[in-house]
Length: 559
Image (spheres, rainbow, N blue to C red):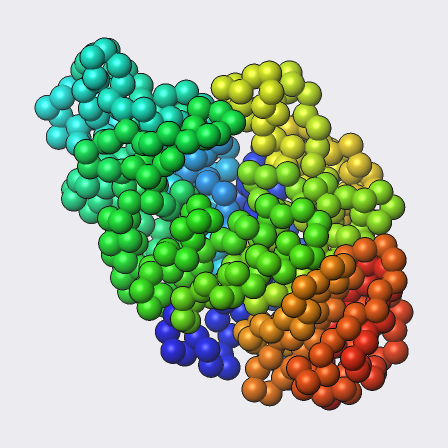
């Protein structure tokens, strides 16, 4: 992070809110049942209509109920939209410099970038460079013969006494090696056989892939989410992984030779130097939690952000959330910036994970407040703001291809990828055609249209939170200090800049609570109420004990 990143200027990837869109499921403009780029363009004003950013604590963009018609996000991350045979729904790329016809054209993409930038929305693309599709022309040439110029662009090896080259396993089940009868060798794929791994030790392949990256940078793309960034390099000698205890064959191995190789960091430094040639570009890395801190680099010269997946793997327990946040705060390299996330396209939606009957919406508001007030860049997953539930997809309708390796136990990831629920109309307002995946059964109650008109809805709460964050420098870039060392049912923490102190109190349970705080740690006892999920006085005297209503969110500013 540059020195200016800690100044007063807004820096979108640090101070903003990033919203993940699964393009197949966001909005269908042409009626074919598949979401597309024109559908995203049509809903940009919902995400951010370009309203002026609040300054000096002003929230004059909000109406009398503290809401805005715009969610107010600062960037959108698009899951893969490149040409692909869709064995893994776009994470098997067959052409890195075009758009899949299901989603539109390059002209549609340029139009999206233009319209998004008009509204102050940055564009983050999913960048898949551990593997390509087996239908990519590079791999077609690579497997054509052993002496092809692109043979070494992928990882090929001879077997061992009629068996694969080593004991490596695919994440999706089965061996990580597939035999190619024509050339009499195995090729490596850490995921599906249709996703052969690229060989980053080949300088020609690396140079061409960097040119592909420049293609999108020159089109105005602002950032990249790096898919499985800790898998790019593999052990040069292809040594066996040592064994350990685990639930399935992949977990029986300690992945010391197929993941997290030291050469990866040199590649990411080169990647960062390329991005730094363009103003305000960023990367966010998907890596294994145990190695996450390493991917910020030395002096933050690798990835700008690294997802904190530890947070989304915790149950509804403030002690667990507190422990994760504090461990990251303690371990982060100097000048590195956290990145918080509770849901994405690979995991059960957190509304469902944290559901508690009639209290489910209240819990969702607590989760939203935690995500949007902790130190770090928050990533929201589409539909999270309206409380979309994890859908139950009948086995006969499962689309997620990797699931076939786990039949009959694997349920796929389709349940968190169902179409966005815009209204109570047929197909939930997603589009005119039959959606590619079934609509959630609760769409008549849980949708944007109905929640937009309800000041007490989850959507209205998200809007208030995001616009409050935009108006509050301490919530964007302030320091973090926990006020409860061993939380039992509540969390309380301070977000501070030299000019502002914000107190956040969260009650995680359905009973009233009295939260004991250390008076010596408080900058003042006089506070102005900025946001509460229940009715409160506008000013409050906060001393050693703070009373919280069931599942209350309370955000206050020192005065």
